[in-house]
Length: 409
Image 1 (spheres, rainbow, N blue to C red):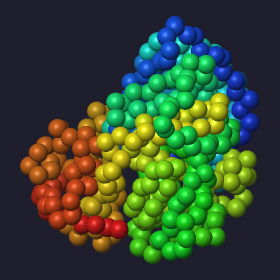
Image 2 (image 1 turned 60 degrees about the horizontal axis):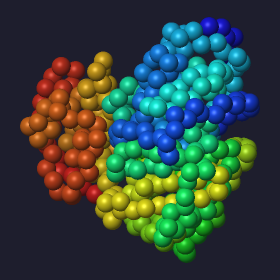
Image 3 (image 1 turned 120 degrees about the vertical axis):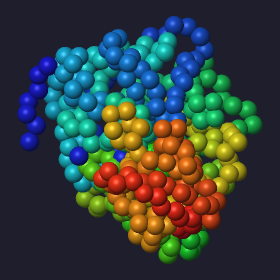
Image 4 (image 1 turned 135 degrees about the vertical axis):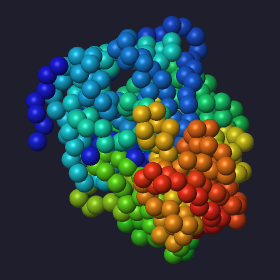
């Protein structure tokens, strides 16, 4: 492997390439009307298992918001002897920092019966995502649109399966509304309507981003009437290329997508820098993430510029929102140690004395050996007033704390 020496989870991965020139080959079809790819859905991330270079089984995030496939481990690149063609600069998720990756061509990716030879990918110089901590599963990269844009993409969140349909075999759905999409640099954008807390309904352009483990993110400085709600909680939007993304979270009263309407959407707000070239942002006002998309079977037609939404059993349910005020991540060799990463000031967790760095040993007398991150956040998003009893390990000292869940918004 060779490369020159180069001069850092936010749900939505803003992988903005600065001239990759990457072109990938067409798939190898074994026959049949479509490819069906099962996935795991962990903490609102879509995880697919693939075979890399016909040798190594890896796990990638399925991400319609990323243009190019990305390997986050230089160690794996070294192990497989990948040759770096050239260095690429990419813009971080904070829309400001320039980062470094390396272009690799002729990579073979296999998902089930779908064989994709001669793929061009990027290898990130340093793993800045730490998806392992947010999913509780070892994650090795991001599967971007360069892999699947030649298909009609159907994501069935309820059955946890992705169907990749050759365009000639796709028949538009009857009695299902087709929402127009703008496809820009292989990424889908939806023009839709949101109702801010104050003022009339406004039209916004949102990136449809299955790499985003949130409901919606808005950039308030991109529209004169897109105001931040009065009641918000400060918070870490997550992590991404470039490090922590700071912002606030509040409730948007209404989101209208064609005939479908959702209410009280937990929404993150992040201002963007005016210096960012519109070539990459495409004049968008924000991002539509998995916590909204998971309420439908979502079909993206890249060729006709359309999206079909078919509601599932989650459609009418309230959005789950953490009511504890603590942000938990997975750590340790087996990713089965759950550590408090941050605590919101004034929250039930903070009032109970919980500190960043505390290890969760048990919840309501059940050992965390029987939990995963999904289960933890489901419990912490239950009804207001529910009593939570935690056993904490703080630098070897074990003790118990109690608090009751409380609406933070």
